[in-house]
Image 1: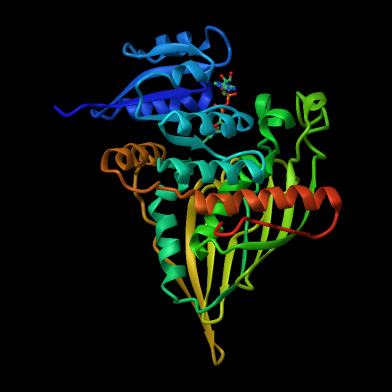
Image 2 (image 1 turned 120 degrees about the horizontal axis):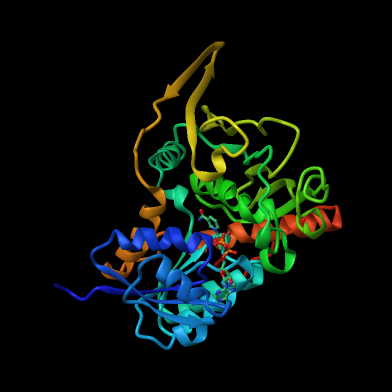
Length: 362
Ligand SMILES: NC(=O)c1ccc[n+]([C@@H]2O[C@H](COP(=O)([O-])OP(=O)(O)OC[C@H]3O[C@@H](n4cnc5c(N)ncnc54)[C@H](O)[C@@H]3O)[C@@H](O)[C@H]2O)c1
């Protein structure tokens, strides 16, 4: 049998468990190292997940001295940057959890080091593996809509505020915008081919997270629970983006792609406070045409795929290492996603439109 891939896990909290469950289904992968900053936590994690071949480390630096092909980075957002840079510099391929980073500068540097080292750096957006999201992109890219000049999207949780590391600015960087907003942005931008963003005008607030009637950790809530923005792109397209962890409303509406020949409406899957487009759950899609007074609406059948999209994302990383192919979710795209989040935060703080500046070629 050929040599198994040697994988390390950095950060052994909630989502690391999902990475491990996925890797364990792969005959050609072995998890050989786990690190956490909290003393003893990696050991507990190894025991809990029955990782008999894994060594435990406190901090990621020692783990990176091991003979590893790649690492899954599952730390809070703030640590994505340093762990990714260190892992790439140590010669390891990287799957980093979403959002890519906390600031745009960090994302840019991460992408630069990826290029310098020639290793894979991919970002953990599992909705990309939902066949419905692929179908959405196929339709938009096919030209059937004509020129898509306006897009609106955004996840609208009604009561979906997390706690812990997600609500601390020093660890998460931002709230709903970073946590689920990055998915909604990816949903829309992936379909229209990730044009370069140039300006953003945004608003954000945290009326719910900071109110003890709605959040049990209200005194520690430092991030936004709602955000809305108008983003302009180099292509002349505009995106009306909105995101919410909590609100007095059932939904922020469907996602719309308005084109010069047709429109596409996407409804989120399911009902209830946690459902929505942001995590890849596409309920239905319809195409709208209207020429010379004849209106037609064509429902597009939803693909019932039964795929474990989280497994698919982790598998795509392993396969890219084995086959020596490119990153499954390219940082060239996700740096633009991060640039928009960065712009939204700056604009909402300044309460005016701001420019988005990206280095040449990004
Ligand atoms: N793709 C998804 O569906 C999904 C779902 C949930 C969370 N996430 C992302 O995963 C990341 C982690 O989320 P979580 O819910 O597992 O958080 P968590 O707080 O449960 O776990 C994070 C772990 O990382 C450890 N840690 C912190 N800094 C570290 C460092 N420098 N080196 C090593 N370990 C370190 C912490 O001690 C903790 O054990 C976040 O970026 C989050 O956005 C993704």
